[in-house]
Amino acid sequence: MLDFNFQDDAIETSLSGKLLMNTPLLNKGTAFSMEERRAFGLLGKLPARVETLEEQAERAYQQFKRYTVDLSQHIYLYNLHERNEVLFYKLVEDHLEEMMPIIYTPVVGHAVKQFSREFRSPRGLFISYPDRDDMDEIIANRSHRDIALIVATDGSGVLGIGDQGIGGMDIPVAKLMVYTLCAGVNPGNTLPVMLDVGTDNETLLNDPFYLGWRHKRLRGAEYDDFIDRFVKSVSKHFPECFLHWEDFGRDAAHSVLERYKHEHSSFNDDIQGTGVVCLSAILAALKATKQSVADQRIVIYGAGAAGVGIADQITAALVRDGMSEREARSKFWLLNSQGLIVEGKEVKSFQAPYMRMKEEVTAWGCNPEHVSLEEVVTNVKPTVLIGTSASPGAFNEHIIKTMAQHVERPIVMPLSNPTERAEAHPRDILHWTAGRAMVATGSPFSPVDVNGKTRVIAQANNALAFPGLGLAILATRASRLTDSMLWAACEALAELSPVLRDQDAALLAPITEAKDSAYRIAIAVAQVAMDEGLVRVKDNLSAAERVDRILWQPRYLPLLPMNK
Image (cartoon, rainbow, N blue to C red):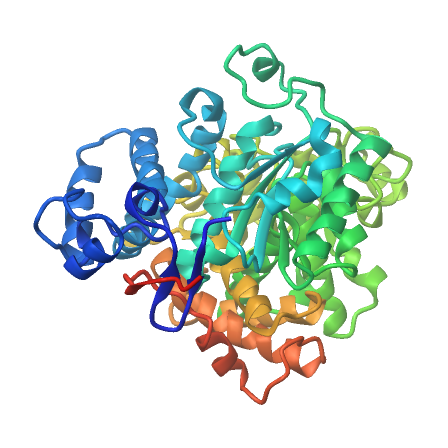
């Protein structure tokens, strides 16, 4: 571990010289003061001028703008992140709307695919199955001592591009960047982890540059034992840390979350984070149009972790309003690659609660073995249509127009990432509905001109939700994340929606307001954690005070020699 300690207004370290400048979280580059240059053996190793962080950020921005290809810009920013974290966060914070899509979705999806061929330097911990007996030693080899937040992936269900093996590591790195940018989480307290259990991606297995464990992906008892070892080791080393599961495939995502969410403070962004953002958008749309969630008919095309996670979150909201769970689930029609989920078909356990009865679809005159999206939309007349299928073009003109025939303000959410995987382009949805649709997408899209008005397209970006949830857990050290805490996040985010002021405005706050969203969510969720008695920090602080005291911001702190 690197030898340094954070204090309130300074950092103590025993590092010096080149080693100090090669430590991203401590490096200041040309901003090291003359006193620091003398104290830490840097005299003569830097140009004479001492710059400010703002001056460095302006130079970095000029360098960034020289790159015109998204992936090249992504690589530039990641390289900066590896040299100087404070400068990186200052630069991206100053240009958040421009750079968030570059470091996060959708461009990170392209970087994931090129991970082994573009590899430059490692970050975080790579734990492969052959090293399963060395779990404690690997965790002991981390760079930072005090870990409060871990984002871990097995790379099996990355965005909308599936199994990416070791390349999935770019996702935890990106998620942690967003935690810091949007919620002020101290990067020195975070750790990205790649759980390498092989890959079924033949392209990767046959690539001579592939850096992961060259083996078919493990499943079953071996996989479960590996994950169990990891959680036990994390609990041993960091009993109060927040464990964020990310981009696990459909089969593992639900089972891993269900297995450990009561054992260790855990969260799955693909299931719970997506559910929070999607429900927030729906709540805002319905409030703006004076409708009730209970009156909706919801079709979800894509019954994987994200799709079922959204259904679960909305179901919980309906139950909270007094419905029985059975009645709440009756509001949903979920489709997978074999069509509508109907009783008698083989489905995963987490999908089973949403199965429709055979009698329903036979009454439609449909074959229960495969009921298409078009048939579902025609017969259900949905008020809400959500896409998590990664099937571009699935929401075609006929389907959208059929839906719009029966609904005054249809809610349509093609959420699949990256951009080219979206079920429909928002421009087409709005034109097909004469501007009546209320749209949110997974990837960022440009505004659309329709009926003489410019419509801003809301991005249902999980960055609006998970940073605030994580910040609340870190501020309270809550022992677990409850449904009530997720609901508090939904309400807080929905209240920020521009559509509440204008029915044709965006359903969600823009990414430029992600910091405000995170802060408000954090306070709301922290308050629930306190009310439910889940706080492991015993003091008399308010929810806001707990959040405020751990906020980190990109600024250079004075460096002090560490007394041994």
